[in-house]
Image (cartoon, rainbow, N blue to C red; front, side):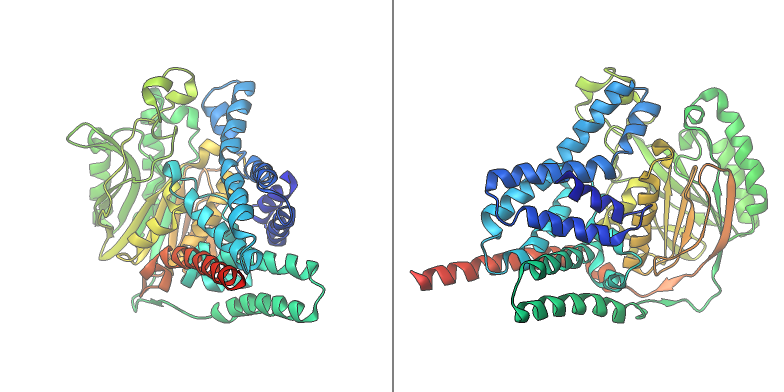
Length: 488
């Protein structure tokens, strides 16, 4: 069972073996096809342990390297984290076997519908961990054509449905059934291929924006050291000189390691220089409101304007659950800038010249609904991050893959600025047009189109897919009750 879960990890970046995800999903269905509820819960937990133990193992780097926990303690906390997440696949398996498997179309339709509902549950339960969704593996396959309509949840449904069809075709001995399952798979994949060339949005008539993304590669252990602050400012000031004149200059999350109000002596002259060269400088910087609450923020200065405060905070990285109990227990619970408050919903977009820019900070880019809501009011997407916390693990590359999906779902160019990589310019089809190497100081330059119009996903978000999956399960239950009553 853990092997089946680990196969899903191989389907995501950086491995990109997308058939492995379908195989792992089909294998999971096989293990649940005849067992009882208790066995299903156990098998689901093992499946989840394989998935999260391999796919989210990068948490160890944050805990051990930057949280200064010992190897033994970091390993224990990582195992606890992954084992806790595995409870959701365990619950999925128990509910599927107990209530869904026996319904008409239980494996064919019920399995993928319930799968998507549990991915959605994971997006908000206990603040959410919307990572390792099955659909992310297909950002470059034929079924990516469905993404501007149904988003990553729709791709997850079609992937799980493909796995169900393959498993049922393997188990079936009737030619008619084989034709049905083959027809479903062909419809899904060929349908995506037909949809891929459709342009849901159009570029503005004006010339593309010129952009420069600075990746400073500042060591995490020095970034919040006050003795290193002036050196950091000097590095940014030296690097930004040739960037002025670009329409947008982007610096990463918390690029200035000081509260915005206390960094005005550096940022105000930068704003004046940006204005004189018709540039908008967008940078991450912590801020503090009038009530004394600290925010993880991003500000546009120069020819731009506006400040955005992060809404979805990372547990332990930006706030500490059960803070009164955990503060001071180990260094991991006292990491720098782990006392942030979340920003309000429905904040206005930033302005870059005459263009509206939807900003997202780090983890926020992995929330499909959050991104779609802000994208409705913007012509360009920007995300800043500091993936230094995850070292040379697979985490930053998974993060980049999810950012690509947001660009594809919403039909918008996306600028991704990071401290140590991967920084990238992503077009409205989710393709990377330019990117940096990891762990180097560099500047990435290129162009970004201003896109007009909305994809269906931007207009409606993920809820139509969620409602459709819930409705499918309800209709299957109704059909079962009707057959049961007629058969009494």
